[in-house]
Amino acid sequence: MHGRSAGDARFYARSGPYALAEVANAAGGVAASSDLVLTGVAPLQIAGAEEVSFLDNRRYASALEKTCAGAVIVHPDMVGSVPRSAVPIVMTAPYEGWARVGKLFHPSPPLCPGIHPTALVAPSADVDPTAQIGAFVCIEERVRIGPGCRVGPYASIAEGVVVDEDCRIGAHVSISHALLGARVCIHPGVRIGQEGFSFARTKTGYLTIPQLGRVLIEDDVEIGANTTIDRGSVQDTVIGADHGSITLFKLVIMFDWAAVA
Image (tube, rainbow, N blue to C red; front, side, top):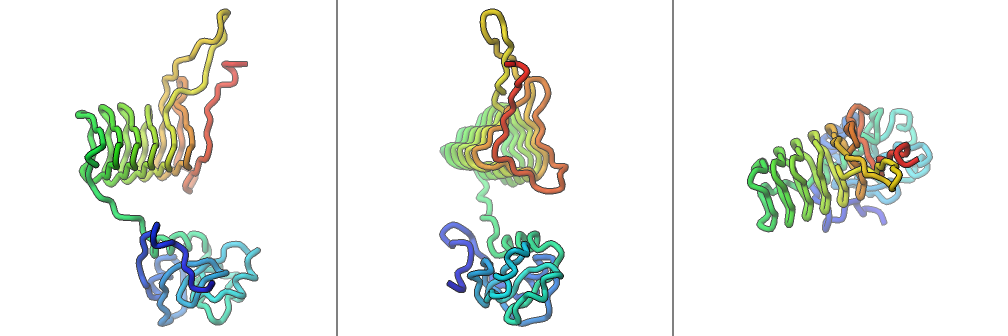
């Protein structure tokens, strides 16, 4: 089992190998001087002598003591539990370091700027030439797609939507009545900006209330697969970026209980 790196090459780009010093620098940690060269990342339980792993939860301290990893990203409090066969990369936020090292060995695939021949782009749409527009994408009038964006196959972006720079929009996503900030990541199947579920009770039945708001998604927000985010009836639905970390929404349902009570 040892030496089976994470990241199947059929699905994930791979880079490296890297010297220990390069890996420690990417993580933002400190490591002793060594000639160790690392080829990939792997969990503690299966990491080999040329791989880097991490520990962020003390519950897995026993796995740390038994690991065959060549280097381990750890908190200063756990350095004493690192086996002599491994080099500790010491930092106060090991999970953050692990994320950075993972990206070092498995960078995002490069953009292929341009519009796929099967995509439908309205004449008034403004698509930056550095953006990548996938197969069978539909981009309606007055849409603006910023630099470095990637729009996956079969995505639908309705009239007037604005997508700021470096956004990632997955396959089969639909977006309407929305303004997206920079570096927003939207996973496949997400629905953004459709009408909310809001009705007024009348003597003859229920009357649909016009939904006149928008969806505002601020910088660095990540939206999980198959999420639904409705626009507001009067006010905007806002997904803010002021939490200090990426916000992941797996399910958001905007429901006006008062209107149907």
